[in-house]
Amino acid sequence: VATAWYRLHPEVVLLKEISGDLADELLSQFPEDTPCPFSIVGSGSSRKVQVNSGRVPSECLERVRMLSGEQTWKDLFQLRKVKDHFIFTIESTGVIPPNELFAAALNILKSKAREALQKLALVR
Image (cartoon, rainbow, N blue to C red; front, side, top):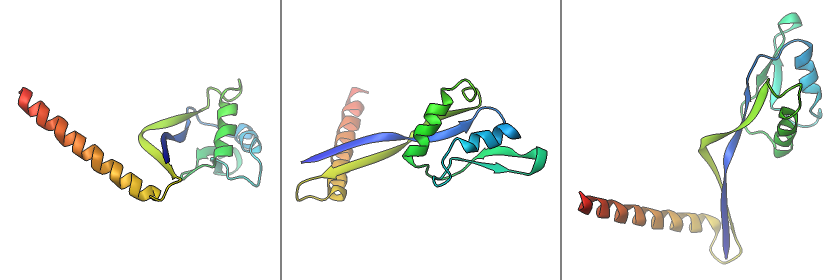
């Protein structure tokens, strides 16, 4: 028995520049012991927020989602999904490991794609 699903990779996008005291306020919305998707670059009056690269923990993504719905933040950043970056998860409770199930599924997909191409060639 196996369960498989996918989701699109999330990304945090700045819609407008966030600088000064508002930058500090945004970072204060995230617990200090949790990796934040934002950081401040620059110093003094030229401080501004940038989005950190790399994977963001799910608890931070949930916080970004909540904040992006609030009046203060809704026009400044968004949580989006990268349309061509898929995260697949396969769980197996049988004797076949997930990586072998994935390889077998790819072989079946390739076979079906070849078959579809052959049928399309006949239609032309």
